[in-house]
Image (cartoon, rainbow, N blue to C red; front, side):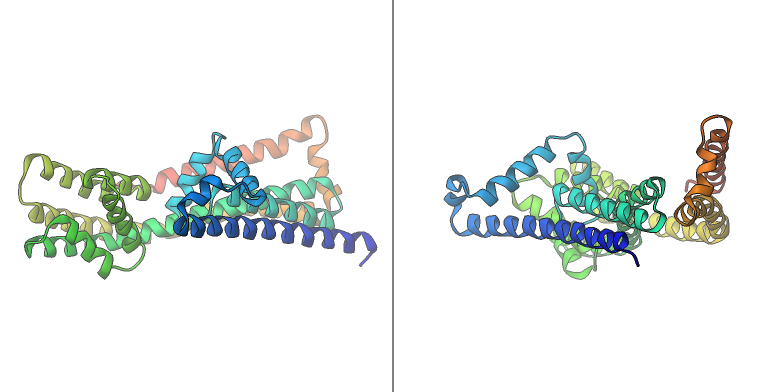
Length: 313
């Protein structure tokens, strides 16, 4: 291992340590401010400490951007208790680390850029996968949630108490999401608004159907327990049918994903191993049409395969 490689590894370690330090510092400042505000409410207004000022300015600057609200919405859907500032710091740190590792491996700027792009999308991919797993788990638990609501309503309790039973009896993520509904109601939101916020966070068609039925019952009256019981049976049948469809199309979906991802992964590996060989396709002139047309055709094939096996139930 030569001197340049050792220096690059030390720089990469320093970037990771710096990003982790900034993340921990932001968390510590946030927790400290919450404790001070809980014990001395006037401290927040009168405090002018440097750490508080810097963190607030950084959060305000990022919050003023157009993507701050979207990022906060995504983090809330994935149930990640971090701010958009902390999320951005982590993405920048992972990207910088991937850029340096690409340079260490390939000794070429193209390899560093490709690996840094992968590093930039890794946190976003993690957030998206966490959100998808959370939504899937919530949809699978929704029939049991409706059964608890129906049982509580038939026992003579109100909807608010029925949701309390759901929070106490159901596992994650249903307990957390309905617990947020109770907290919103306790601070002054109406039940309809709190349930609408739940639909926005979860983004589930089955949940939206349940919430709409509750809204209709609040406006025109009726037996909510019977309506929810019918909706619960419909959701159970729908989940069973979706499971059968996913089982029948699992091989096709996996084939489409593997065939689409394999050329990109091989291109990154070849760029890292032998960048001079791969750079021949990026020379000025007609050779650039080869990677461009290949990417377009692979993406078209992937979307066509996904569209063919997609069934709306």
